[in-house]
Image (cartoon, rainbow, N blue to C red):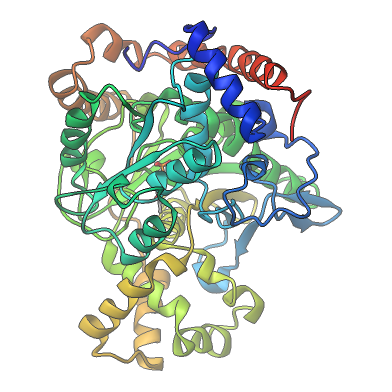
Length: 493
Ligand SMILES: Cc1ncc(COP(=O)(O)O)c(C=O)c1O
């Protein structure tokens, strides 16, 4: 089966019967894609949001801990003031932390990739292990989703990822053998693919490759895109001239940036793809090691709608490492509040930004500078995970870069260098030729290495391909409805 053959009906009736019996026995009801966008009313009051209770599937959405904006509610987000960003444009960051179990939005992608195969009978949880290749959060999401569904989930990730990720996995996999460590760090995705190619030969394993699973694109177009739209619309209530200027996202699998396609369709927003400067694949066809964990993987994912992107921005991991220390140490926070006048309550929440979240904020600032955006322009971005996943990385950075202690002078230097002094360098505005250049780079991974046909590869150059994908969602939801009904659930939890 190629990534282009998505099931829209039950393909294996026997397997589907086993799926239904399995879900009925474990009392697992499945949310539809529509429920991930507009959550169904589910009574989850007594359900610990960190437990593997299957009812937490109904917390896989952006609305778990909404933020009031005037009289309205919007998905949880922070608005960063000019005192912090140095620009007039309004920058808001949607937070992945309120997502259940892994406190990152990657449960959304994992569920979306698994659900169509489960409810069509392609994935039989009584016989198969679900394999989740990733650089850290998607495999945690995949393990969480697998365990909620009562099946084995296998994490495949580089051995150099943060210790916190491995500790979480060790506590949540069904068997220690379900953690597979591949050589290298963040940008060693080829090594992950090689491990998956070996695993794919095992008839009891099914690979859910986020880089080529179009449901990852779809769920972010639908759920993250509508969440970003809700944040913008809530703010527009009190600022009628507000424009949705850009959706900004660093790309790992390029799932989350699909929200940009939605923001462009609904609000005319530009789409800004971000990557680490130390691994400038989209910018300069480059490669390299970096520490912005979760993004910048030395290739162009199959599910990246590159031809719809408007800008590419590079951010250095020197900046994200330093600002992580600024935002998460007493000296750094005191500097921001006492010397820069940033609201103490906001500073107290900056720990919701993991490395890639800080990277996204810096990219939004660069975009605002390059495009000369003003107070009527809003840039929406996101923090996939929070700083708690990087405590060990911070200790290392504190020791190697700051000699073990970070004081007010260090804080001023980090702030001045990376926030106020951040320029608009390493920003490309994409025209047709630049888009083609980035798109074509994907050929080497997908056609030469992974066996995608040239015709399928090329189809993705046109926007009608991506619109066509979205037409599949009602069929997914109809299969989910049918599976729930057969398993004895009227609808929802
Ligand atoms: C921390 C972090 N940030 C950003 C991303 C990138 O998101 P996406 O894969 O949707 O492009 C990931 C992906 O796993 C991640 O783990």
